[in-house]
Length: 378
Image (cartoon, rainbow, N blue to C red; front, side, top):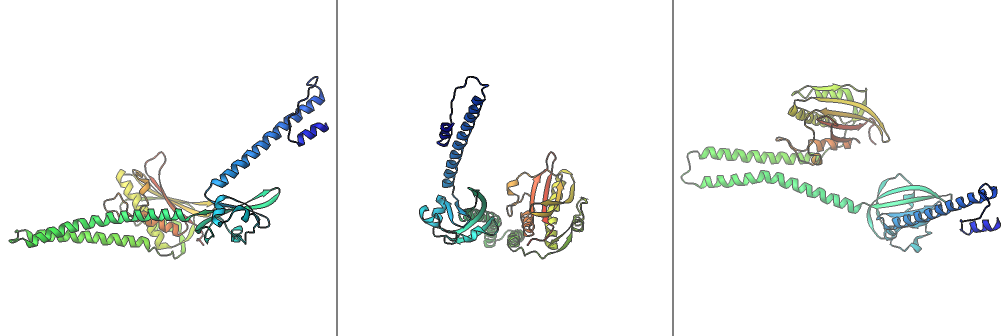
């Protein structure tokens, strides 16, 4: 037995003893010990492989990871963390979070964004933090993700989309203006002039005035998007608000399914405009198929708080191009401006809410789902 236990301590978990019969109690004991030894060996091997995989992942990920013990001393850092602090791991291990400039990362709310200049890199970082135990002692894992590159790429793509839209809209107005101006100039220089030159001049100037007016309205719409004022909050009763907006739609009857008696804190003028846009879009869609529009609401309790969910449902043809729904100035309507949905979503988000449009399941039509917090956002 002493030799058996010594073998287990040395890591040799395979014990093979012959017994005269499997019914021998001592043989059964050794069989169980063998089984236990093999299980421990597999578990130890799995743990070693898992630790090796974790170390490999830590070294290859492009986020900076730091592990601090209960006293605030650094116990582990990956390659991205070394590059961020611009030091070798031997020089970092054992230093305090305060000496590394990471003291504030050990407390406060997470996730959050930090604007910070580290020895190896500066910029904007997202901080995440979690707690775990090693050998029974508490530790904290800090992860810093560099947002600068992602934000710059998204900013560049946003500028590219904006320039494309501006170029398209401006060219649509300037091209006919330039063409007509050249035609009218040649007409004015003709001698003798044709009998109907006054009518041609009047038509050309009318078209120029119309196109320049359209360009002016386009720029005004763009200014409206960029200058949305901060909401002035007041108490809004949901049922009264919906009835008031629905009464403004005179082209067809809009059905209302009454929900809970809910009041929220919101900017009345802004959310009026938001709901007007949604109802108008729903009616436009329903008229294409001879369908109907229904507005209903309910209260939702989520991890983020209590919300009222207002749904504008139509039985129109549905959404054919979901990718461009919230692209400024994109529209499929002949007389559309392409800012209604964009402005509506901006208003919803300014109130701490959200707006999404989805096609209905198993039925034609679309649901515009608006969520607004019942309590005013901080």
